[in-house]
Length: 127
Image (spheres, rainbow, N blue to C red):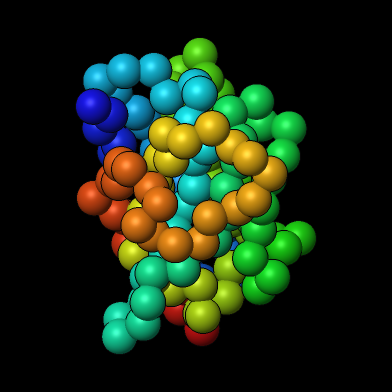
């Protein structure tokens, strides 16, 4: 079992930056593909970014490319999401998630494919 705890959310003005962290405990998460999802009120939970166990491959949704960076430190059992040039439309609850299955080259957007979830952290971007 893996427990995931997000931190780093908050209120920021448009154009500002935040860095989210997701700390894993319970067992090592280094073999897992890790992802950040977000969910705005009344909307579905969408994948924002993902990273494989080695960190050598990453995925970003189109609207955050060039602004967000996902990274991981397997020694610290932690992943990060650096968010720059934030926009009001980035406002959402952000969740980290872990996929136990070996990465086969495809990124999974379906939340059902992820085995572990954090409780979420609120990010609010004011205009």
